[in-house]
Image (cartoon, rainbow over all chains, first blue to last red):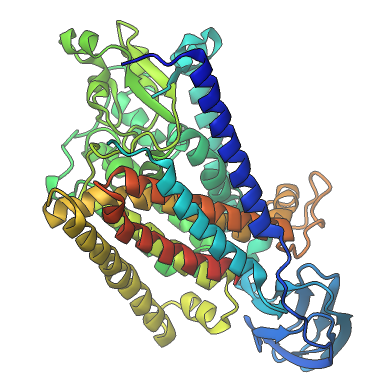
Length: 160
Length: 441
C-alpha cells in the first residue's frame, strides 16, 4: 500500500472536517430554521375534556397558535388532574365535578397533557395530546431522516 | 480497525483479574434484587410509591438501555444477580470454582438453542407489559420466578443455560451488544491454537471459546477467561461502535427474529404507554378480557406477520438486486444486522419519553421504598407529575435520525451495491417514521 505524504493527509483531514461542519450546519438549519407558514387568526376556544380511568376524551386536540383556550375538566369516576407539558397549567377535578382554567396557546408544537392525581395502576400513562399549530418538529424529523440516509450512503467508500 | 486493550492499564488489569470487585458489585445487585422482591410483595400497591416498580422499570431498565448496552455491551450481564445462586451450586464455591459443585451438567437441548425462546419471552413481556409495569406484586413474582427458574436450570443444565437461551433481557442485551464498544478477544490467535488445555473454554460460564469469538452477542464479559489464561493472552478491547457488523460476519435466523420482535415491541410499547389512546391502555391492562385478546391478537399479528413480512419482502427485493444470489434464508439472517442499530437507537429514543418524565419518582421511593410513609432521606414527597421538554423532543428526533443513519450505513456496508441496500433502507425508514410519529407526532 502506498503511504500518503503528510500534506495529503492534512488536506484529507481538512476536507473531512469541512464536510462534518457543513453537515452539522445543515442539521441545525433543518432543526431550527423557521418555516414560512402563516398562523391562523387566534380565536377563543372552549374545550370540555372528560377524564376517566385511564383516558381523556377527547384525547387529541388541535388548536392554533395564539388561541385563548378555556378547559373544562370533568371527572366521570375518581379524582383526576390535568397537567399540560410546556405550559404551567394544571387543573384538578373531583368525581362528577367540573374544574375550569384558561391559558393562551403561545407556544407551537405537540404537547402532552397528563393526569396529575394518582388515579389507579395506569395513572402514569394517562396521556392526551394537544397540537398547537402545525407539528413542524415531525416534518423536521422526516427531512433529517432523509438527510441521514443520503449521508450514510455517501459515507461509504465503494471499491472501484 | 482501532482497538484499545484495557488490560494494558495496570489498575484496570488488577480490577479485572481479581474476582473480588466483581463479586462485591454482584453481591450489591443481589441484595438489591432481593430487596426489590420484598418491596414488591410487602410494599404499597400504588406503583409510583413502590421501590420495585420505580427501580426495575424506570431506573434499571433505563440504565440498561442508556448506559450499560451503549457503553458496555453485555456489561450488565457481568454483574447480574440472577444466575449467582445457581452458579454457586455449580461451582461448589461462592468466589471461584472448588471442583465440588453439584448439578447434572446436561447439555441444553439442540432444538431449543438460539434466541427463539428469548424472543418468545420478550413477546410475553410485551403482551403482559401493561400489568407487569404497573403492578409491584406481579413484578416481584416475576423476579422471584426468574431467579428460581435460573437456579433450577443451573442444577440440570451446564453453565449459564438460562442466560444463554431463556432470559429475555439476555436476548435483548446480547443482540444489541453487537453494536456496543466492548469486546473480549484473544491477543494472539497462534498462542491459543497451540494451547491444548483450553482452560478459557472450560472456565467460561457462557460456553464460549475466546479464539472462536467473532461476535460479542454471547459473551457475558464475566472475565473468567482472562483470569484462567496461563499465557495472559486475553484482551478486553474498547472498539468502535458496531464492530460486529460487516459483509462477512455470520448471523442466524433466530437473531433476525429476535431483532424483529424487539422492533415490534418498541412500537407497541410506544403506542400503549406514550400514546393518547386510553382504550388501548385499558385493553393491554385487562388481561383475559375480550379487549385484551383483541390487543394480543393484533400485537402478535404485527410482531409475527406484518413486520417480519415487510422485512422479508425487503430482503427478497434486496436479494434479487445483488450480484450473487444467496439463499433467501441466508439473506434473512445476513441482512438482519440492520435491525440491531435501528432497534438499539429506537429503544433509547423510546426511553427518553418513557423514563425521563418519571425520574422524579426515584428519590421519593428511596426515601420511602415500601410506600409506608417513611421519609428516610427527606425526599418522600418530592415527586411531581413530570413533563416532556422541548429538549427531549429534539433529542428524540436527533436520536432517530442517528439510528436511521447507522442502520442505512450498515445496510450499505453489507450489500453489494447501493441498489441492493435501498429496500433494506426503505424498511428502516418506514419503521423509523412510525416510531417518530408515535413519539413526537
